Image (tube, rainbow, N blue to C red; front, side, top):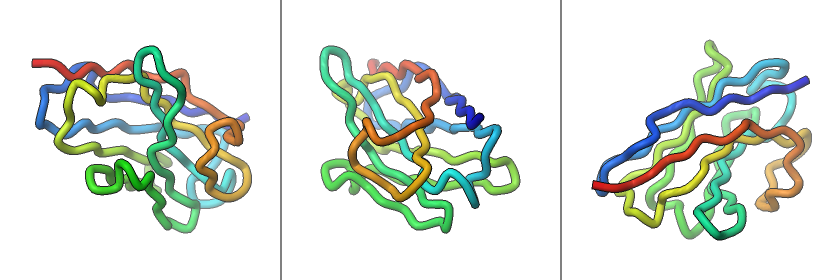
Length: 124
């Protein structure tokens, strides 16, 4: 069973860079599942797909966040990471890492494996 666990600071100041890491067990970020994504849920709103990294290392980003988002991976640790720059209070959300057995999808409901989520609050 694939398991994912998010980690990172829960508080970030405005204009700084938010950095989160997802540690994977029961699967490999270089083989299966194929797609590894970051998804967030701001308070009172629905899930928002932010971007993903395929097991071949290709990255995909939401057009609305592309200029501020970077997803990378550390294959030696079976981890992938999110960096979101120039954060504002509107970036306050629960952040999830998720995996999909097949190709990268922008539809959050198509991801079969999810971490428990981590709350990130942006405030000064």
